Length: 631
Image (spheres, rainbow, N blue to C red):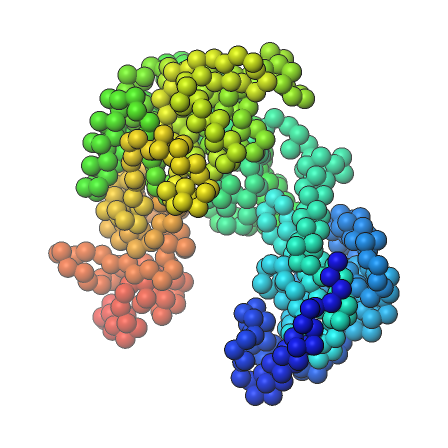
């Protein structure tokens, strides 16, 4: 246990000198650490009194009581862990504080609470950095990380005798901050002031929240997590923050993906329940029910539960459309993609392993399916497993299967793994770079021997499987960093396809957009060039997957307006208009025209500065053109 800093006096003197220099002259000494420097600059910008010695914001007793009630969930989940920390302390000076995401203190624990009372570090007080200067609670919220602030690193003089160590508490489902824990004590006596320890306590609290939400009878969401239905949680930007295993298996939805469930302008933070239909990658329709996802009385996103729509098909086709994908389905005008298609077609004629690299959303699985469907194995299974989406303790049983009695809750009769399911066919190992390092030797053994050993089995089973792996990581760099086995890398990387990002082949956007229209049975709808011009200025971090989501928004907007029967700039989502310049080709030259100006003003709701920027012209030119139109 640390009881004092080794060079306490020298450190204390240096920090005091730095503080004096900055508060007196505004000049920043060279040896101030980055997060303290940034905090001091912010405090200076707020014109904070560096001589402040107590928090200026403390609620009335009635308001403080309401605050505690509002944050009861956070307090209940945190208190057992904080009390254990108090019991570990053999000194009476450290004080443990729990605050919400607004830096409002909701609990103070310790063996001596006189010091926090003196400075208003009590329930109902607020410790925003803009109110109280550099401090463990407020600065940790801004930085979004665990940190320690020693003595004179605090901007306000009132906390110069303290050392504060703090860590954010994040909601384990959305990763949004819901609270802060902070330990404060005399700087000359600093037991338990260890960032790793405080961070570990925060993680324990997050774990308790996770267990409560998933399993407690008092949870509003436990019934969803305990069902066999796919469940996801997404934020206000339609980013998936959580997926359960069934959502990965049945819908191929992954954490971090953009999931446009509602095509229109919908307030995702609204508390009402919203229902919708969702068609998955196999063409199956699901009923989707969403409701706001709340933790500690704060809406952090929406939880969506998927239920299959049961229907009796009139005629059952022999193959799903997704199984019929071939190289003609890879739409391109780009020479590099055309070359990759030729290359992949040649790969289809062999049984050698293929490694496909490229950013998320570039179409790696599309290439993999096309290779399979053009190979001698096309009538055999094509099995997909996402190595990064399966919980670590389930990876082995998913890949290799298990026998009856292999572990608690194992199915009667066991379960075959993906290798056996893909026998005589192709196994697509998506996100292979996320496969845990300690499980990689088992995969390597199967690739080398062609024999699978299910979990709990004594005898192996021979399999004949062609491997296609995909990743968005630089596996060679991971090998050099000892994050991926070199022998497995070379076993997978026999034939390679490197798919470029959409921003590197923007000439494909019009063809892809047209193909999406055909998929949706709208092959005759015309699209103005201004739409393609705008889309080609976007950087497409989500690649083709993001383009497809954008297409659905545009189509929805078009169906709402549908005045001319032509998709135009008015149908573009707002996020694809911001700071973009739209041009309309006229007689092979770029010119402004009254119709374009009219559209730009409509899109920007009459804001002429934004309309001019949208058109790529100056405001003076816009005013001149408007004058021509009025005349």
